[in-house]
Length: 389
Image: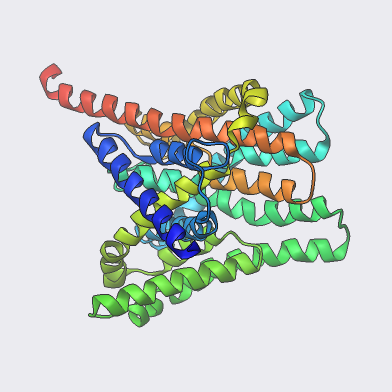
């Protein structure tokens, strides 16, 4: 009986996602906000709460973010990544200053403690890699000049999480001393190791995984992505970071064929990821903290847009590219929720969870909307340019 209910629920969720995707396609819009709202409807307190399938969806969501970041990494080589990271270091510092500090200051102004300020600063700092990856693909911005700079910012943020998350976990447990420092160092070392291995052995890895059989290649790259992501998570590095770096390590014909083979799986599990995010939001908790979340969201739009604009300008990108970069970085998502969940898991911090849910939900909707508007404006300028000349 339980299995039949599970299958029916999952089937209806997938059909609902298909309908929403078709609706988004008809209006020429990314389906991400619709997936998030579907999650709200299917969660506790929603219109159609799920009974048995939420645990399964949680696993599917984890696979979704892994595949989203893995396929994004396939677009770039390890050499491109290291070059962009070196050039983006000043922009990364600006990103930290403009986006982490406001969250921490707001927490302190609300009378929250220092630890909550540190947590809220992390929550407002990190852009949603999953949403940005989907937007870049949906809007056809993969080959744009500003995209490598945007990806460099995302990678720097994700690598910063490799330091931040274990540090916060240590502080939440109240641990101090040599063992706490060692845990943080292990996490940082693991992220660096993955990148170094990709630089040194990326071509050999690509030759190893390549196969003329589509079935064999799909199974190989899917299994590797899950394994590397799991190993990264094991040593306190984000699974998403591990998957992204693995994608960068795979190059040549293997990367080209992997992109087309993995795309249907990525689309399926990516949609599940965004639905699961919506499931995490408790609708009844939103009204009391709506003003705080809205204030942080308004600040977040301004500061992230400034970060994207400055990053693109440093790269010598024109006005249209700067606008695209500014809109891409606005969305918040998986890491912000992960930080709040880490805090709530230790007991307390209920107000932080509610504020985070409100804040992320607003920006997860505003970000894709803003990117769509910018895309429309830029395309309109491009179409009008020949006539005006």
